[in-house]
Image (cartoon, helix red, strand yellow):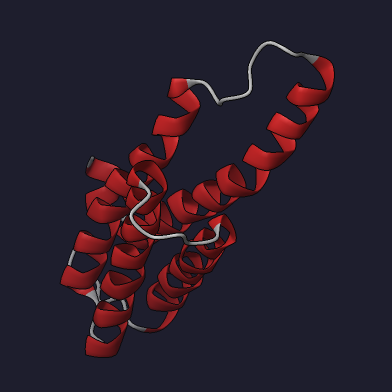
Length: 127
């Protein structure tokens, strides 16, 4: 948690990138698994919970990034894409709306880019 407080944009960019890689690799892993095994058609529970972990880590990273960012637009953009990512993940679990799974790539990539941009251009040195 200390790292999230001291370098929130680094942690946020890493968490968003890992989330994106998790989303990209999931279909590939299960296609390979389906081709080699006939036992399991659903992902393991621990794999499905990783995205919740990424959302929690990114929440704290965005919270701390917005506390030190000097741009109101950057703050609003970070929170907008976090809520969009959270909604898509929650919708994937509960299935409220028929949203294509590929839409999760957009907010994950946007958060990575925004964290890196915020770090370079808008981060004040309060820590």
